[in-house]
Image 1 (cartoon, rainbow, N blue to C red):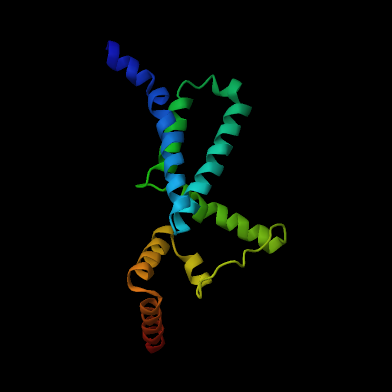
Image 2: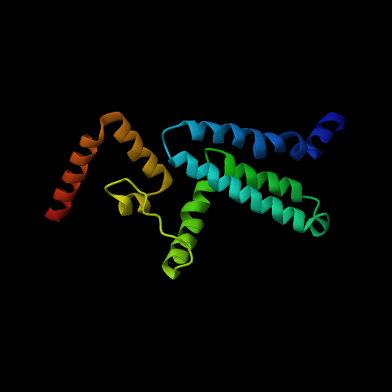
Length: 161
């Protein structure tokens, strides 16, 4: 097995820095430069989750040393968070972090965000990351007036039923 076995044993060391640091750094810089805020959500959430994962690893390194597959598990978790086909960080934000933040705002422990410039903030917040991305792309392509017409037509159709 020689070379192939060595590569397999050290996969996390070879691929890990690229998946966990280099690609997220590159994608974060692109997100900062893009006019969209949707990709910012993905990458800010990734860095928060990666920080928590690193803190967990540093805090429990003596226990994790007993688990020989920990480095591979960490690599798989980071791949799920990073890769665009999964958008795991956005999923975590949509399904857990946002609900937690809303609960904290309801209880008065976190300031509410009223900085949304959209006319439909509640509707956009109920959409998935991909749906908001599609709406933003539609508005960029056809303009806000066209989107307003679509909304009015949908409201008119909804009133019929």
